[in-house]
Amino acid sequence: MDSAELAGKIVYTWLTLVLGFILLPSAFGLSLGISELYMKILVKTLEWATLRIEKGVSKESVLKSSASVGIIQRDESPMEKGLSGLRGRDFELSDVFYFSKKGLEAIVEDEVTQRFSSEELVSWNLLTRTNVNFQYISPKLTMVWVLGVIVRYCVLLPLRVTLAFVGISFLVIGTTLVGQLPESSLRNRLSELVHLTCCRICVRALSGTIHYHNKQYRPQKGGICVANHTSPIDVLILTTDGCYAMVGQVHGGLMGIIQRAMVKSCPHVWFERSEMKDRHLVTKRLREHIADKKKLPILIFPEGTCINNTSVMMFKKGSFEIGGTIYPVAIKYNPQFGDAFWNSSKYNMVSYLLRMMTSWAIVCDVWYMPPMTREEGEDAVQFANRVKSAIAIQGGLTELPWDGGLKRAKVKDTFKEEQQKNYSKMIVGNGSLNSELD
Image (cartoon, rainbow, N blue to C red; front, side, top):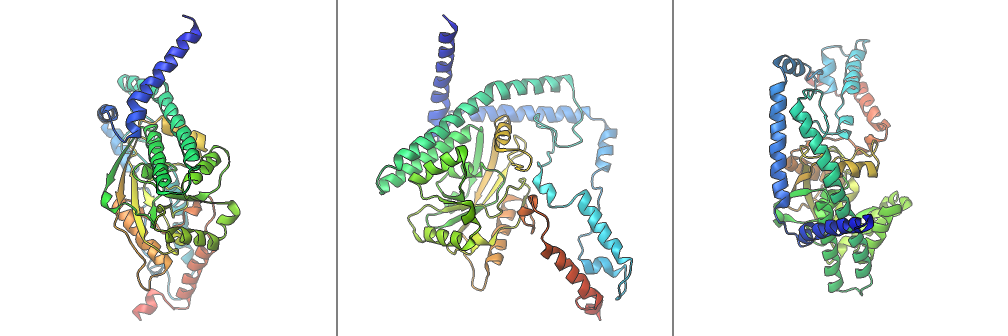
């Protein structure tokens, strides 16, 4: 037997195993119990590693690390209260100390930029250290880590790349073929089947384990589904349980090929870069979409960028000016098995996907929530904040008022001017605590 024939048999055996034990079950939404067994072994291994680390760390180091936590004791009181003990009614030079203190706090650790870095772990997950306390290493831990590297890169990575290639190929080919059919209910059903099947295969490529809650509140046709945004795979996570019409910017390369194929069979809403800046055009096209109650619900991530799975930041009001019914969805990933957050300013898409495919697994919870509509006298901003608060509470996430655009842009001048105006009002005695007490 020559090398070519041997290689052919290896590839044939590999594809047969992948097709029989993973592709076909995932295409029909079934499980043979292999992933469940894998997760049980993984959980037991991580629990063992955690115990080894806790036993190996000396009490002195624990005390030292615990003393270093909470360097900054923040005072969240408003400006009026913070300055009331430092100054009288007139301007005093000592006022600068309050602003200097707040500035230094922001430089050391502010509540915005830390949302754009990986979430801190409670214990080491044998992937990477995201906490300075994870310093203890023993021979047994080292052996387990090395074995994990071999499994992740030599077994899981080739398997996951194969599944991802098959899933994306089926998606492009399937949506292109379905798009050739005349408009009918059969075409719509086939399109939904292709999307569901291919997304399930791609989720298996990440060893995804998804727990859906409150399925009776799943988004309905003619509505708008809004969710917090952690990763590009949020789309796969949601589409595994139901089909959506995507909204987004037209891309080039492989993503562009996928977009052009998908839109042939499903009414996705893609915009050119110049069109995305025209808010009125975007609103018009989205209103036309939801006016047709036969079309799939629109999936929108109002934050506009990925946040690190700990918080929900400002929702853009555009999604809430359209009208119609809003179906909120909260997504929360379990960081113990893999970091799903995409830090696009640090990793490109290829690097990010490599990190995902070499992690242990992607585990998350998805909560469907009761539909919400805009109340009488409520503007788009108030409605957006109400929906954001509901998602944050359901997902156990921190609610922040800041714009996710701060990930790449500077603070708007309007925010600075607002603080200046508040201070000016205090100088003239209008709006200060002292004037209110008088």
